Amino acid sequence: MVIGGLGLGLAAWMLPVNINALPPALVEEAGERSAGTAALGEVLLEREKLGPAALVLQAVTAVDAPGTEPLAEGLQRARNLQPELVPWGGWDPFLEPLVTNAPELTESTPVLQFFVATDARTALAGFLSNSRSSGVRSLLRLREIDRAVQFVPATRPGGQVLDATVLLTALLYQGEHLSDSLRREVRGLAEQALAENDLAGIEPYLLDLLSLGKRLDWMQLTELMRLIDSTETVAEFAHLSRLAADDLAIIYTAALAADAADPVANYLIRFGRQGLADLEFALGAGQGAVKQLLQRQVPINRDSGPTLGALAALALLHPGVLLGLKYLGLLGGAFIVFRGVDRYFLARTSQGALPHLSSGVLAVFAAALIILATEPFLLRAAPVSEFKLSFAVPVLADLSDGASAELTPPTSTMDSSTLISIGFFAALQVAMYLICLLKITEISKREVAPLVKLKLMENEENLFDGGLYVGIGGTATALVLQVLGVIEPNLLAAYSSNLFGITCVALVKIRHVRPYKCKLILESEDLLTRADVKSI
Image (tube, rainbow, N blue to C red; front, top):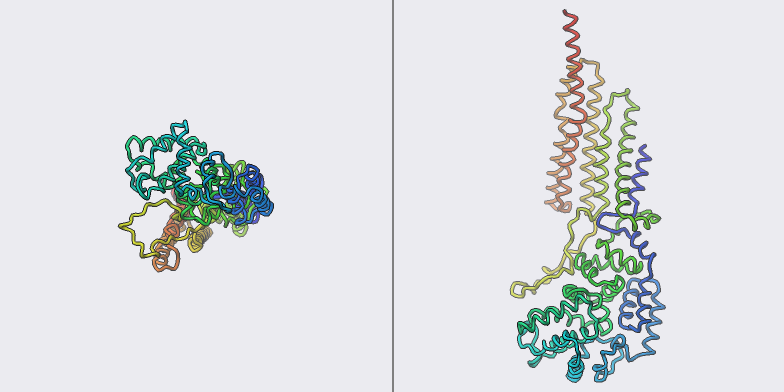
């Protein structure tokens, strides 16, 4: 029974499913059911979108995904055939006013670089002024507003940056490169700015677009903007482009693979660098892996150990069912193990002499302990994300102390010393529980009167309360060790000793001591009744 219970528990532990996390086997299975990430670049090349395809190539090269070489060769062929498209990342008929006066470049170029020249802005403004779109006309009128906080107004010297950014917004709007929801939001901000004669409301969006326009070419920018649903997501992507500039290709490709930018931004803002590493793993597995990871919005459990990969497909379809089977298996395995131990001791004593172990209660606590040890994201507090949106306060910020700005790198698992402490305290209470059972067995086997056994049981009250003493001592010891820095500070490790102690004493006194005392009292009363009858 013990061997069978251990086997059942091991099989349950190897099921590819976790709480608040995805095992690598599940991510890989999702990737195998879909096209590879490099295939995304091939599709972009077929649509003559060289700029986005170049970022996809950077990403698949970084994650060593299959299909990198064919994509690189295809991109090079496309560049050789149409070198005039390389600076823009592809062709768009709305670029005609800019192409005429644009400098001759041979590499992918950030789109705002083309808007800096006065001639280019004049030509683009003249082209857009003929637009029949009321949204475009509203955006162009923003150039006339003389009140701004973070920009120099376009009508003043030095206002070229605001002028170029507004024209870029109008060109994106005219070419229908913004998603429907983002178009409505941008138009509403523009109309509000015109009504108030103040750019304060739309300035944050223009700053974010400025950040993206300084890093992406025209086609890369348009492909991204069609995936963004709100100005909030524009702000998050601009924030990520500044903090993770070296990984922009990874972030950009993940948005293309998921066909949505919002979940990518949410995932990275929440999980930081660890989330970025998980996205790289998913990109290496395939587009389906990226979609699965972003749909679940949970990290990858890289310390999950060996898993039954054959059941990964079932875990994708029915994760809740498989998670329930996993915990039922752990609980059933622990119950069978304790039941086997119980029968082992009974076989070596007189029948019925040893009280039965409370296998069900012990199994629940053992399974809970195993779940805590193998589910690192269950109780762990979310680490501080390196990509968390924050607002700088220049007056209060001390920029001279660089060390104070460093973030503690996130940990993906519970500290090993904490797990060892919890396991040690649990083992102590199990040993204490068995000692109490052996003492009850010893008293029950003595050839003495029931009243004497009752007195002996009362004499052992301190032993039966021993679990509490051990639990309190364990908690005090753990707190002292945490203060001294021997183990990581964790209240769960300290107070688990008290919890196990309370559970042990409750099991001993309620499950064993009380029923046995009740039996002795009834036997004593029966003997006294018989003695009275005989005396009469």
